[in-house]
Length: 328
Image 1 (cartoon, rainbow, N blue to C red):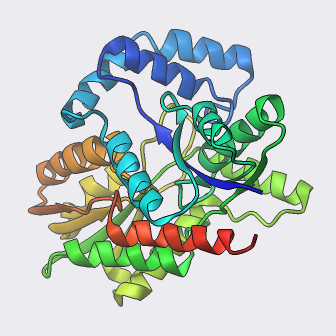
Image 2: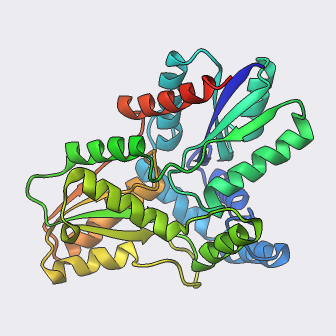
């Protein structure tokens, strides 16, 4: 049986043009795993409340981080794919859950190369219904419809895997100033109901599912232990909330505004829910977060990049893939 690898990340608009951003947001927000309302309500909210104005604002934000070669998330993901492919003797393809290259394209590329068993690696350390679960659902849907001869397996969430904790810890250590008041680990937020739904599903299916919030705090705990940092020097928060429904707390923007009032003037910020820098890390945290913190009275703001295409991160993926390949 011929094996292959499919790396999957979130995705990005094809360009910073408003219509490309609108197309991307429509696909993303119409996913029932992202906005989990009935289709008619979701359609109404997305088309009438979000898409008329949001793409214009988002396009301006994307322009701030866009490079000559395109989206940072796509660029770093491709570089990571290349490094992994050079060390692996089976095909390694890259796909995005939304837009290009699509999951269908990635599976087709593997199929064309004679692959009959695929290891799908969702590039999300923590499991949520709006990230890992929607990737798995899309892959299985395509497998049943178009790639019936393919066997598909998935790499499970790695938020607490020692290899991931080490490479994340090392990346922080390399960028952490000697004189800092707080290390802030800012994770992508989710609506509180997403955690409730995931836990309820796990209970019904008799699958052990850990709440997303707990996964994030566990990552923080393990990284803090690895770096030998005291608890009072590390803070966990959640960013990127959308809409009026309650999202898991504490909120990153609130933490950043309150830090200076509490005497926290020098901070370093890491975003462990992301393995590649993107709009949420570069624009929301490194630009807007920095501006908010300094405006509130902060003095020093250090942004710690995502793992991106670090050699040690590529080596971790290669190690995991080789472990799967050895079980032939």
